[in-house]
Amino acid sequence: MRSSLHRRIITPIAIAAIAGITLAGCSGGPGGADAEAGAEGDGSVSVYTGISGTEAELLEQSWADWSAENGIEIKLESSKEFEAQIAIRAQGGNAPDLAIIPQPGLFADLASRDFLKPAPQAVEDNVDEYWSADWKAYGTVNDTFYGAPLMASVKGFIWYSPAKFTEWGVEVPKTWDELLAVTKTIQEKTGTAPWCAGFSSGDATGWPGTDWVEDLVLRQAGPDVYDQWVTNEIPFTDPQIKEAFDSVGEILLNPAYVNATFGDVKSINSIPFGDVATPIADGTCALHHQASFLDGFITDAGGEVGPDADVWAFITPPVEEGGQAVTGGGEFVGAFSDDADTQKVQAYLSSPEWANSRVALGGVLSANTGLDPENATSPILQESIKILQDPDTTFRFDGSDLMPGTVGAGTFWKGIVSWINGTPTDEVLTSIESGWPSE
Image (cartoon, rainbow, N blue to C red; front, side):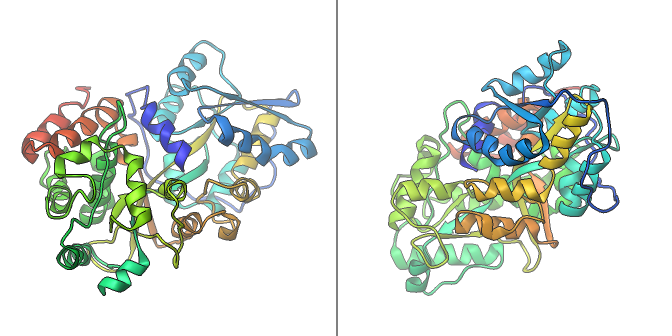
């Protein structure tokens, strides 16, 4: 999601303490239609979010009919300072009824401090029926379920030209080694670097490189190691994490493979992340690693995205053929009130009815299995939904969003920049690890 990604990179996790996340789902009954009865509501429910502009307007549109039918006014309040303000408001007794929270770490912190109310049974029933255990786990803190996912994004797409692949006689790779082989073939046939990359993003420069590393940790070391890594049970200096860096480096640190149309390896740090859309759209760059939101940038650059169009994409392949593991992002709905109206709105937002309503309006996707992929407004969003709904897909939230802000939005980003600039990997990993809080 384009706008959601901008929120993430501009406003990193404001609260560093994320201890207490439980990464284990629990089972429940069938999906429920009505929320449990709490205190009687007053006919209005406030929703606080960092979502703004057009996306906020589409949110309001998505629930307008339900709101009118149920006689509950949903009041949306947007703030660019959401991550910094939500805990302050909760502490000061000025919390909203509901909040759309973009980071599991922040969500877990609010729940562990008893600001959030446990989710009503209707919400848990919906999540048990329409969401995977991976997603439910991120809304579970200390064995208590607090909130359902809302929207989602899929990372780790590799963008390419189907026509050029046919011209070069290469196919979409099914393994990481095949991806390296395809890269080598394109380089040999064209005599130019196949990959383009841009890591520049103001104060958040480096974040696209963290996505690369997260993809390789998940694929090479597996989900259990990934879970231990994001909580520092396995440090950055562990050989398994170094292996991921080394694998990414086979592409990003290879001057024969990057940086198409832009310069040498070091140019990666100075190229704005959205600027790579132009060479991808016009075919002068063969391969690029980026999340599903790149679709909008490519369209803005004059390209068409689709299986038979100018540009299409495949998920970064696994180490061994078979199975699917993806990283991504999303938001969770947390409740600071348990009155009846708030519970009804929270239940509606966890339902396939809301997911279909919002996705049909364009620009976003959801991992809700009750969502019809055909409601998505672009081929890449439809493909993303199918990936998320596949029961064989292993999903893990963006690693840097799960880490404390001093690491995920601090030393990790800075370490990537230093690494691209030529600092030895061992030195970079030690530097990143130093960002972890001592307690």
